[in-house]
Image 1 (tube, one colour):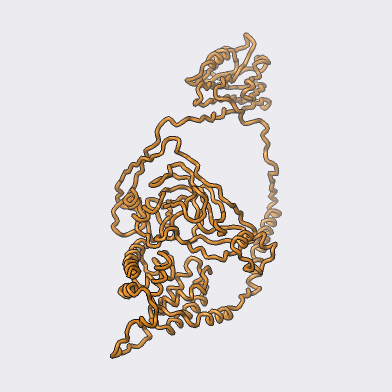
Image 2 (cartoon, chains in turn brown, cyan):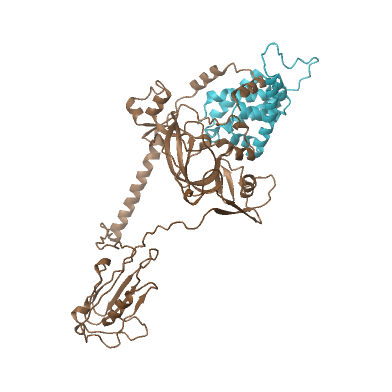
Length: 468
Length: 153
């Protein structure tokens, strides 16, 4: 609606101007006395909390004294000095355990089992070498081995692991000890395979002198960048919908009908996951003192005829892009001296426009926070904040609410009807056409509802009907 | 309280005038609306202040209808509008507005002159925003047609 039409409409109603407005408003101001809070409720409100806390602490202290309960507090966290894991390259051949024992010291009935992955190569020979180890029994059905400490040579008492793994396995055996050692070796031969080696040594002694230390290390999963080899051009969405006539009740359909709709994005492989976000011209943080802005955030829509834009078809035609996505970042910035908010969105559904799924875009909405100093200088508001000292102004942030009180938060998901151009927002950024005209929707289960309204909902069926 | 009473005074006055068609009564009702609004702090909810304001005004207008005694019709009807006194450029548009129903006239006034958000209007009229939007768009297209016709002439 343009200004001329609006003026003509106003004139057509032929309503006279009020004659006692100023007089009434002056009286109204004088009638409003400054509200003084009575001191007693103020005192009671703020003193009650610490008094209650003190009373509770006193009761607890009395109980502790009477019952003789002594509370021990842990004042230090345990410190782990050993590294949890070491970095390895993906193609590295991994040898895990080498244990040598003197000939003739292996007791009868002792064996070693080595489990190797399907890609293991050299580890088989390593495990064969380890047949000399005289301390390992893995088959549960085999009899337990009891080895007297004097029967075990010094070399066999210590199990060492190559330095590459920084594995520290130390077993000190005393008296009668049962020790089970399982060595699992897997060698990573391809870039995609995960190299995992587990060395477990468990020991349980029957006497208190036996000491067994067990540490387990897992090789880190190698980070592999796999190029996209398949063409991800088709996106399938399944909608649950039912016929509910012209009523927009936010109820789930009783018997959902599955409508499957498939669309093909025109994006090629390298266009998926583009970063289309823009850098905000200014970025403000919220300072200590918050003051209200002097301008109302009347959100004049960019298109001249947007006020008449209600029909879905019009909205769809007007919107350059229709996507839904999650807010990844929120920046408070300014456009033409007024506070605006930039939201960076990760697109996860696409209906229209030159945006693809997984792209990141920036959406601007009016309202937000900016420094009061910039606000005054850019809007020529000298004199408006005379009640504040320059020091106060320097630490003040001005706030202008967005239309409909919309406040974006990171992690929230919306359906956006977006347009670009108009205003002075950075090139490449988008903004919702008009918040008042259902350009922002919140997904709620199987339907979408416009922000700040729970009366109207847009079901997935309607969305499919209107937008496909 | 987020609304500016000075801004709202004119808007509430227009709303009351449209319903009672009397300048003095409309102004009284407007002032009464603000007094009642300020008397009750529970109305100062940031999100619903505007809705409360229009609801109070609407209820006062209804009370005014009830108070008003039935008057006999005058024998001679005055002419609806004196076009010589008032410079009205869009007579066709005025006729189009006059041809709307009372509720439609009220809706157009609130939405396009008083700039009441659709969310508040939908609460006031207990209608879905979609239904309200479609209705307003339909009315607006008729008015726009008349306006453009007047412009062409």
